[in-house]
Length: 352
View 1 (cartoon, rainbow, N blue to C red):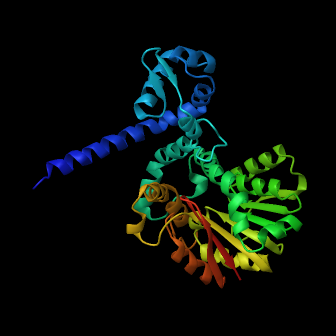
View 2 (view 1 turned 120 degrees about the vertical axis):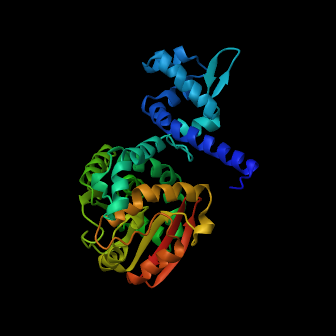
View 3 (view 1 turned 135 degrees about the horizontal axis):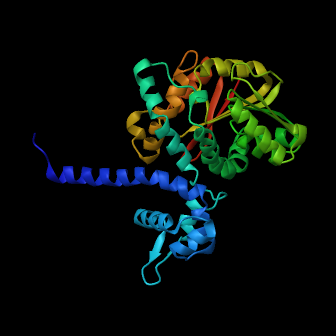
């Protein structure tokens, strides 16, 4: 072979960086689980012994963790005082759950993908997919925490106002269905923002519905919010003013059938909001860091989930607006537009 040495060295450098990031995924989970990031951000600078004492952990293990985090650039180290600290920007990513860039929960998602690798590999061979009910438990809480960051800073502030006339309806008192609601993060956020409206969350995963009910109870939302186990093709009709799909339509086996059912559950002037992972319409347009992350998640989670269901359309997490438009039109929606976007999401409005 005619090997270009410079190109080989550059590629090996890329691989070394990727290996380091992969190895540190478990360390991010440990730091999040044990409160190491939050303690360091709140009380640093401190030594490894200080951090271990406050968090009730072993100093030797903590010292090695701190060394790995420093080598990754996730925290800072002062050789003179032998103390570790976090810059405000680092703390926003790893220690502040309410930050617009918080990613502390990413460790759960990475862990779920690694734990379920044998099952996904089997799905590659069988073509039968892998359903949500067969996934590692950390996938569910990881998904809720990962998406919470974006929803907290965009849903009420930007996405709902971008829909035609929806905020006015919600302020007067509307009926809203949240399909594939998971742990109810999006449902509860909307309910807290619009106290005159009623919200119904539906998900096919019983464990997620149980978690959603507990979360709603903790927020004292009373009977304005309810959660039930149901699929996107079986949830009950109540003349909804708004039906929402938050980062879940592409996971469904029959998204066309789901949207067809949605049309029968809404009132004539109802709106369907589709929040999907950001993607352009062609592979070459998605060859970037966001596409890299979403294609990987789609390979390990989204595509197998769809293939495990009836029809198994397998849109994938990088379906793009044009493909989603075709699905919505096949489901009976005549009006379709991009209402808003972020670097991570497309917000699409569909009307009958």
